[in-house]
Image (cartoon, each protein chain N blue to C red):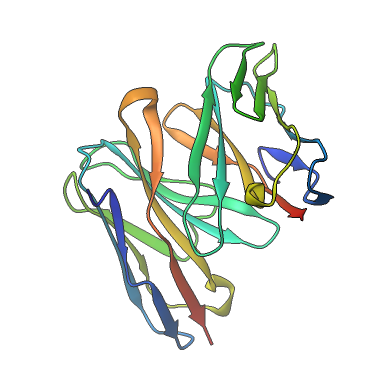
Length: 109
Length: 112
């Protein structure tokens, strides 16, 4: 059983469309991070959220941390082919760091 | 500016063979981690080390051992490799502003 569940697992959309990826858990996290991973490489940090209800924007990407700090979402506006990749959420519990199941996004030109 | 480096990049093992994956970080981080990544499973924590001299089990520690040799280095050993250990392995360290995790480039291991 994964501590963090992501949905959807796979997403294929046309360039210009909007999308939302969800990250859910029954645990409360002190912080939650989103990563993007490209084939053959390690994950790279996109953002860290630490406060319940926090919203952060990174260009066309909007990240939200749930009020209870158990869930998060990633919204991409006007997706581009360069957004293609595996998106992973990760939560911090003490010294341990747990990753979600991942969402594989393909943006078709 | 190396960050986290891990070796080897690729390895093929026969069932029952042993091997060690090496990892080193040059960011003076206290915490280091070993993850495995399998399709549809995301990244699963094998072992972690909160500081030099300490190691703890993660979600999937069976079949693995680790050594935190010093602050820089954290190795992962497979004593008797099994096909179920075929995976991509990532080493990571954590620290700095925002307590960010930094990953190595991954090690592709195939056990036949």
